[in-house]
Length: 88
Ligand SMILES: [Zn+2]
Image (cartoon, rainbow, N blue to C red; front, side, top):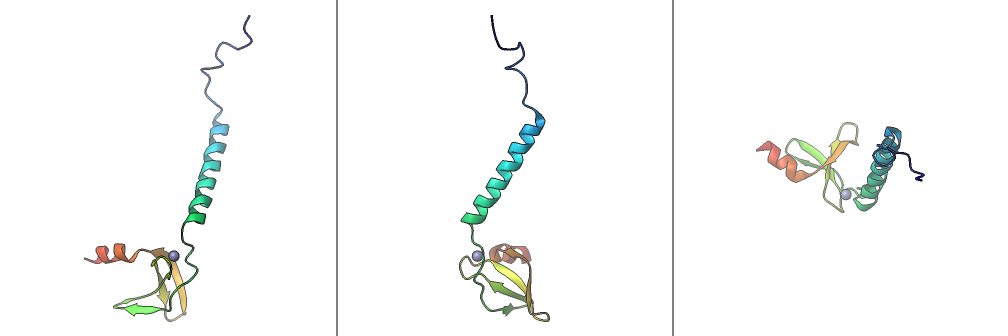
């Protein structure tokens, strides 16, 4: 006399449960990365080098474009070494 249904072990988990786990793991991974990486809170004054004006993070060195006309930073942070390779 068995209490298990015949297909119990071979049944796939409900797809909703998998989606929920995937979203949960993605959210946890995002916050873990956010906590462990630099938040770029301390930025240098604006520098103009060639045609490019940017501010640099004093902690990690990432750059962010700076608009002199509006006096505001814009766009995402980028690695200066990647930009240098792209120009060559
Ligand atoms: Zn930084």
